[in-house]
Length: 271
Image (cartoon, rainbow, N blue to C red; front, side, top):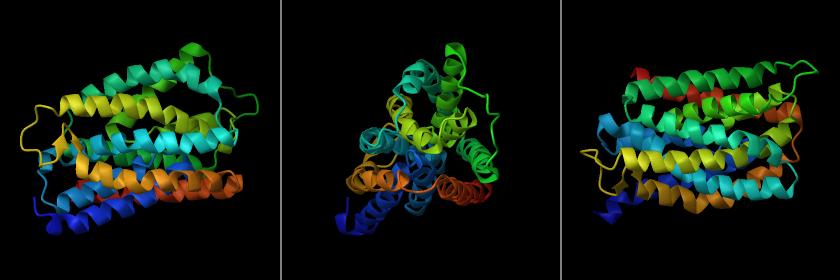
């Protein structure tokens, strides 16, 4: 491999890690909403096979989220913004959904995965942008309901390569969990989603043909390592800022990020 020729791509991965890591800490979204569309763009520019383009972007994204979640989770926990009771009740569903989503993703085409990504990110952005108010009496559901919510969140997260914050944050705020606490808790929920997802994309891509050099299953190691170097450093910075921003501002930032990135992915899918 020509290192000099690959150097611009390595630099791009470092920059991507800065942006994704900061967003992960600030918005509790694990960075996947940023990593997936931009990784897909970079992989396409490098001439990766179109049949595995989205699978590589999704698998690599979930692998980076595993480490980014740990970094931002530590800061959110120190700020007292992680509800471990919610985490404990939703994790069984997260594991079940991870298995389901991983199996589905391996059977979806690149086009189907890209369209799925766009639709659900638009939905999440609309929830935040419209600032829909839950009923004052609305609470988190019983254990069976939390299992179901975790299954849905995790299944969709595997299909869009995200840590689940794009659904778990709106879900928790709809149940009257404060936005700061929802974002902190989402960082914790994103960890098991990323673990199950990374394992699934590694296994399902192990026998895939035509993958670029440096791939381990559907995980592209040069991108993973490049993003990790900077994302782990920037995630705590975003998390500290999240604790200081007013609720209204935080929701607007969240929504704008999601709208822009969903539009980018939809454009790529249609093209």
